[in-house]
Image (tube, rainbow, N blue to C red; front, side, top):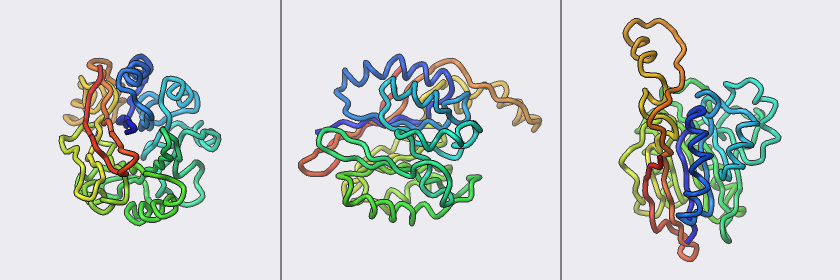
Length: 259
């Protein structure tokens, strides 16, 4: 069996610091073979940079996915093509910089990873996530032994629908973006491990990782203001997938927090 840890959105310096502090120990204690994390909020809560990618990978992350905040740090547009451990959403418009997939290795297994953005209540104009996932799964069929699919989306219904759509074809379908972990981690009937949202790897004493008073103030008066990243109750949030190489099925799947 190989063990794959998938972590939810890393939020700001608090999330980065806890990951760098705890991940090497977690990997060793649990015998984890591969770590995937969403890094789109790693730079001050919005976007990521090449420097931060390097720090996270040196700290034990093998592959980083992104979402609708991919381009929030303007410098990143010129950096992403050189970052072999990063993939941006696969259903962005054709021709944008960056990789639309990763192929990583754990044990004897070649593992494909890609992200699709949802289209309900989301800002970016993207191609259909369902048809994009179909296409990439077919393209990765001969190059990989299993594929992990992330759906970075607001609507739970869209995430769940994609999970059922890919059941038996993807090893795992996991949701990100809302920063709130869901209690629906399960292995679907045809063998795909599924969860609607991993939650965030960041400060939970806040409003989805941001300063409480600032967010409440915006709801009360509607006046735009900065939302500083919160600082307290920092946790890593994600799921640990146990994958049986012989049967080609998920044999364990559990959501956990680490402080």
